Amino acid sequence: MSVHDFPIRQAALPVLSNNKVNEEYRQLILRAPSELMARCRPGQFFHLLCPTTSESAPFLRRPMSIYAALADREELHFLYKVTGLGTGTLARLQTGDVMDVLGPLGNGFTLADDWRNLLLVARGVGLATLAPLAHAAKDSGRRLTAICSARHADVLMSVQMFEGLGADVITVTDQDGTSTPDALRPVIDNLVAQGRVDAMFTCGSNRLLKLCQQVSADHGIPGEVALEQQMACGIGMCQCCVRSFRKPGGIVQLRVCAEGPVFDMAEAMGA
Image 1 (cartoon, rainbow, N blue to C red):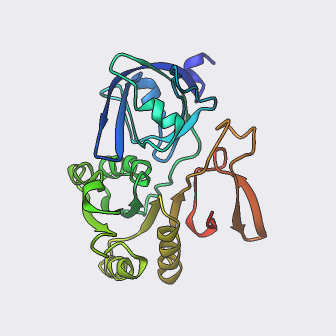
Image 2: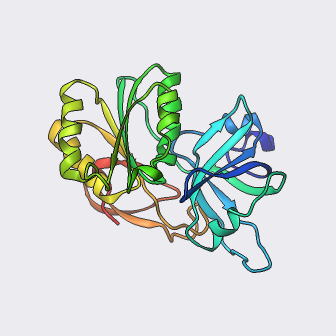
Image 3: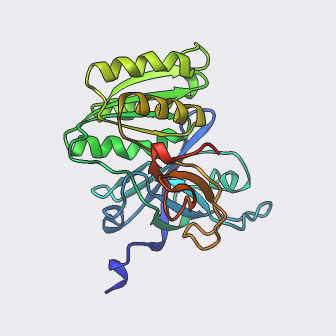
């Protein structure tokens, strides 16, 4: 086995761009080898070594979901919100800088052969985690509906990307009152009635997870959730990302980084 056969790689990748998407989020694009991008699966993540500056020195790597892994263009995309020390230094990266990444890590989403109609329900940066599913749906000829949720219209993201990949997009916001579980439930029930939901996927909101779990249970529709959790090592050694899950034999504790971050929707419990 050569180093190129090992599924996880540590690599120093040059920054192609690091631009604002809106007032809250930025998109980081790195030049990445096509053979590394070909290993990436929807739902997986990379562990990023954030740069140090004269004012900030983040110690731990930061886990970040793959927004896009484009083997043909040799590009690795991340979508992130500046929320603290690590992402604050990420925001300072300039074209030509080098970013140390470790990955791809974790287990990705399942796409069973008979899941021909997919429903994505995501909010905020959770849209980044689900975005690669849109590429997979297009590549495999599946129909995709994406419900994109945000606080207000100015921070809705990925709508054009989903539409460009052939998805039917439904946008909902807190601002107009369309993003609440009570408002979304009839929207999803209507999609189910039209035969447009063979499987559901969600990320980015506990209330959306609970809503999807209720719909899944009521209609017998399978689903998966990508969980967001603080991590230290990202490879299962430190155990700091352990969460509780419902299994047939009772509650079990699993590591989000190693056994996840994608789990059966019915087994996931709120943080």
